[in-house]
Length: 105
Image (tube, rainbow, N blue to C red; front, side, top):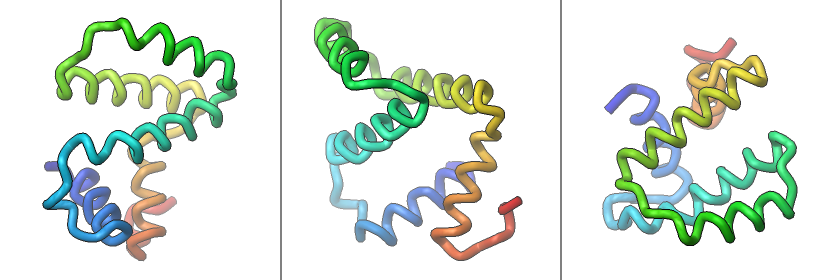
């Protein structure tokens, strides 16, 4: 795993306790909350959300690796359009939460 991923898991462990007993499906709600935060931060609204949920229910389910890749690509595009370095933004949050200003700018 990358340094960034290890730090993110460390933060989640500090906030939630031991993650080793969690199932991957236990991350659905926390992930969706974060995705919804981004949806609304980008200017999305309830109507668009409802339409997406309704349309997506009938879509084929992806493998986890493909879905993760799609999320990272969309994060990169959203970051680009908002002139944000997505990795630096993540380090900034992790460094504040974990008390390590090494990467903060």
